[in-house]
Length: 175
Image (cartoon, rainbow, N blue to C red):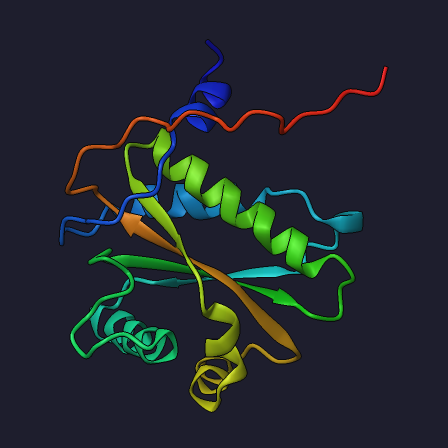
């Protein structure tokens, strides 16, 4: 079977990670694959914020936890030591779709390299907040950006589950 198709069929979300951070070369390879995602008119209006600093990662996780309404101490990033945050330029008409394609590429690349990943939501709310806007300003990112998602990244600390059965009647043909 083609390796790309195999990764598409086998990739699953991981919700338990080992504390060890993946090698920088693996993180960079995943990021590079995200940068090659398709974008409307090749505008490439998506940015990736790679968070490998544990203190900053924990700070963002706490912001995400508060937005999600979970009890104190809950980690919405499931212990992932790396967070790849995808943000998109709101001035681009296809920004949500473009950012979603980046997220898909990140997760497929992670799987193909033996890493676990999971799409974590609430990035939109994070970067609408003053706390999130401050992060962007500290990075020198100007303009109107929307958080698309977080790609929790690391080594899985669990078995990768098998794919559930696909629901019927999801494809229609016009011939």
